[in-house]
Structure formats: C-alpha cells, structure tokens
Image 1 (cartoon, rainbow, N blue to C red):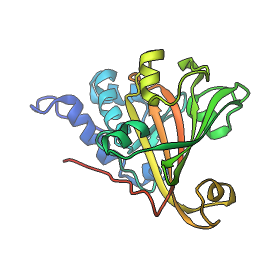
Image 2 (cartoon, helix red, strand yellow):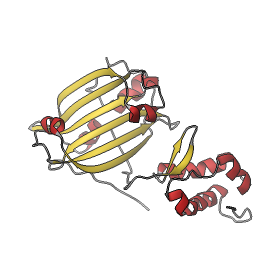
Image 3 (tube, rainbow, N blue to C red):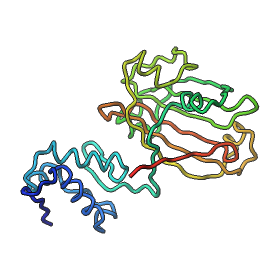
Length: 242
C-alpha cells in the first residue's frame, strides 16, 4: 500500500504524518493487530526524516492509540477504553491539593522477581529482583485504596527511603528521576477475598481497578502501579480539553 504527504502544503510535515497515521490505523488489518509499516521504510516512502515520523508516532503513542514494543514494532492499541487526566500527581500530592486528610494503614516493602507483565513492561529478565511496595491508604476512618507498585532497578531505590514523603518527590529529589508521562487503564471488577479483606469489604463487592504505567522524560519505564479502590468511596475524574 502506498502512502504519501504533500510537501508543498503549508501544514508542517509532522502534522501531515500524524493525520496520515490516524487514517492508516483505522484500516481493518491494523485494528486487528497487524504491525504498522517499518519506520525506516515509511519515512523513506513519505520522503521525510525518521525524526519527523517519530514525532507523529509519539503523539499517537501518548494518546494511547498506538503501542510500541522494542525489537518488535508499533501497532494499534487494543485497550477497550483509553482516557487520561490532563494533570496527574502522586496520590499524596493529589489528596493534599483536595484538602483530604490521608492515613497510611499499611506499608510493606520487599524485593521480588517480577511476573511476566511487569518484566515485559520494564524489559528486564524475569529472574532479576525488583523493589515492590504495597500501601493501604485512606481517610482516618478507614482505608479506601490498596496500591501495589513495582520500580525499575535503574532508578536506584533501596527501600530505605522515607515513603511517607510523596513518591515522585523522592524520585526527583533523591534519585534525579522525573516522572513525566503516565498512561492508565481503568476497569470495574469484583473484589477477591484478599482485596476485600484489605478494604473492609465483602468478597465480590464492586471496586475500581487501575493500572498506571509511569515513564521518565526519555519515555523509559520507571513504575508499574496497580490500584484497587473502594467503589463507594472514590470517584475517578478525567478532564479532557480539545
């Protein structure tokens, strides 16, 4: 299939490439999982630089429309629903902004071997131990969220940090790692026995389950976070601007 853009048009090339990609990914073969054309070949066919093409691809990756796998290629995201807030903070910072008093009910740190999903996200060996943090948090009267975070070993976290401080403040000030991009997936599910026990619920009660994938300024993965929220105590708000 031949693709082209108009080099005589006043519209910047990366914008034209972006719009072309939006058309391409709607084609049946790509929505069904076929990899997009190779970047080198597509850039050559469009007569633009790989840097220009990469700008367009990065925009669609950021929007959650595309996913890129190192050594494999780029394809259409198969997420059922994709939405993101405009500004995101650590949980502590967000609650502080909202003037909501927060209590930490549990904090557990351990070094574990990652499961397949985590090792694939970090692109590390499954036998390499990484830092895992579990936190049960909520209002003084009771917990409403249970977090599980895994951190890329590249960051240098030791587990001895004061995690009563905001997480992203620790990363930036102590380890010079800036959390720059967050991608999230939110679904509804029934609480299993373990989660129900943590959140003081009956097994089978509805909860919100959120996966957060956090990247640094170079779009390198730094945190894989799972959040389990009581559905009767937490509302997740998404703000979009066009």
